[in-house]
Length: 82
Image (cartoon, rainbow, N blue to C red; front, side, top):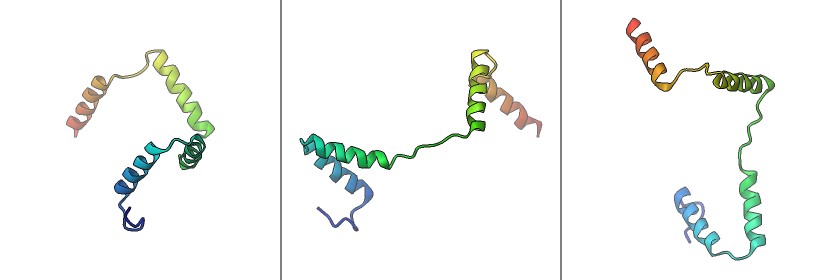
């Protein structure tokens, strides 16, 4: 294996994947999973954002939205106004 400080990110990922694929020890795999899970970014939404999401969902349920095609037409109209 190359020196870790010289190894590219892609090469390091490939190396680790190949080693993980050879592992049979579930406890080691669980430890790796814990390490990987700790690096996940968890977004905490504010009350304001949660409220806006709920309002948006209600609008969609009530059919109060534009399709992509409709929005494309509106954008084209706005661009032609200038």
